[in-house]
Image 1 (cartoon, rainbow, N blue to C red):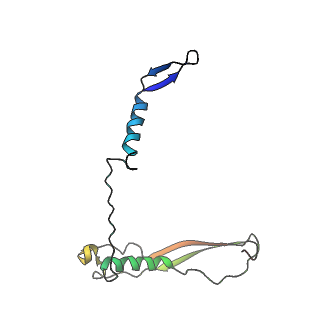
Image 2: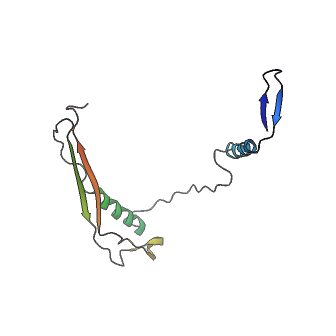
Image 3: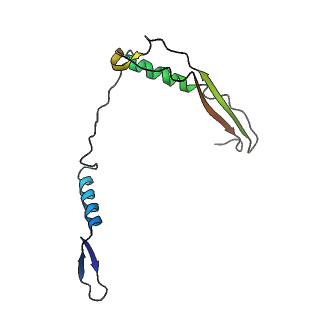
Length: 130
């Protein structure tokens, strides 16, 4: 229900409104615990030991994306911009190395791309930034 106050006699007039009812129902579904009641929330975190196949695969993929990291700092002219691309070759994994799913039972397809690349850019700011 939507309430309107008349300017002349300050009486409350009740006006039926379906969208307002839906807003109230949605609000009441969210307010009690901060999440919608129909939503299943899984609050489990599985900690993998470093000797598990899944942990080995995550470390492998993470090491591929690191590439060169940071280079030695040097002075650049104010407003200068340098651009480039970093590329890395990803070696193909054998069938035994791809047995990582479900604690080493399922073979995963990790040989999707033979190279990995990302753009790199450098810009010059005023010297001696704090």
